[in-house]
Structures are given as structure tokens and as C-alpha cells.
Image (cartoon, rainbow, N blue to C red; front, side, top):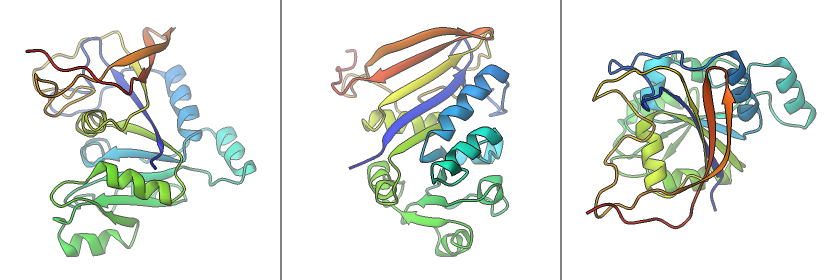
Length: 232
């Protein structure tokens, strides 16, 4: 049993999430920001990797007061549960995700996380230990399900998204593609990590919707449950 997982990203026309320096780039604008806020408001939890926390310091909170009010009217907290995948417990103790907005926080670490870091994080979040050296994402999603998370939104970064896709743990993908080219062989992409090969199957998608948005385009994909072998 695991949550329904929805990935949402904004990429450049050449598929980059940010520059090679990992500096955040404003790829979309107000219209897309409102869409993302609605998507977040509809989720039970929002998850990012530690790289995103260190680079962008996001709060992962819902911004629109009307959306917050609607959540509360439905008997939910004003913000989704905020989840950080952080194998070694590197999340800064003053990170916005641990302090901004009310509600539950979860930091997922591996058994390799130093005990003192785990203890420090437990002052601000529920710490879930899953996996030996790296966070076992399958185990983590099962734990989130036990916490009442039925719908999980994933906002980055590329390493986390790539690992979730490779493990078959993603159900939907929203991609806003902006009207810029960032370039750079080492700039992060939507799905970083080992990637496909002859022995690692492709992740296949079905196009659910496509629409112009601001000066870019929004693609909504559904992930096929069957996979296809990589190229030889």
C-alpha cells in the first residue's frame, strides 16, 4: 500500500531544472504558480529531496488563503505534510520546511544517518528511518501511507524523481516547459541518476493532456505500469 504519487516540475526547453551551479531559475510565472498551489492544496503531503532544500530552502506550504480555507473547511490542516528525503540527515535545523507554516513534517533518513543528527531533527519533525545507506523509497511511501497520506506530490529534485520513476513509484507527471534554454552537461534534469540502459527499462508515459500556459506548455502524463527494455 502506497500513496498516489504525482510529480510536478518546471523545466527549460532543453529539460533542465536549474543551472549547473544548482541555482534556481524562474521558468514559469504567476499562472503556473497558481496551478502548482492548487495541486499542492489537493495533496496530503509534499516531498522533496535534500538537494532541493539546500539549494532553494522551500517552505512547501500552500500560499493562497482561499485554498487554505478550503482545506480547513474540509477538516484538513492548512498545509500538507512536508516530507524531506535526507539519507544522511543534512537538513539545516533552520530550514524553512521545518518552521514555516503549521502542520506535520517528516524527514526520511537511512540507518547511516549519524545518531546526533537524527536526534536534532526529531525536535522539529517525525524522523522515519528507511534503508541502510540510502533512503528506501518504497519503504518510505509505505510509512507515509500509514500516516494517512493518500496523495503525495513530489516537487524535486531530479535525483529523487529519477529514483522514484526507476522504482515504479510514480503515477502522474506534470511538466511545465518554459521558453528558455539553460544548457550545461551537468545541469540537473527531470530524472537524474543512472538512467536507462540495455538492462534498465524505460519508463513509459501516456499523454493525458497538453495545453499552452503563459509562454510555455504544460504536459500532463500518466505513467504506464508496464515498462520497456532499454536500447542495446
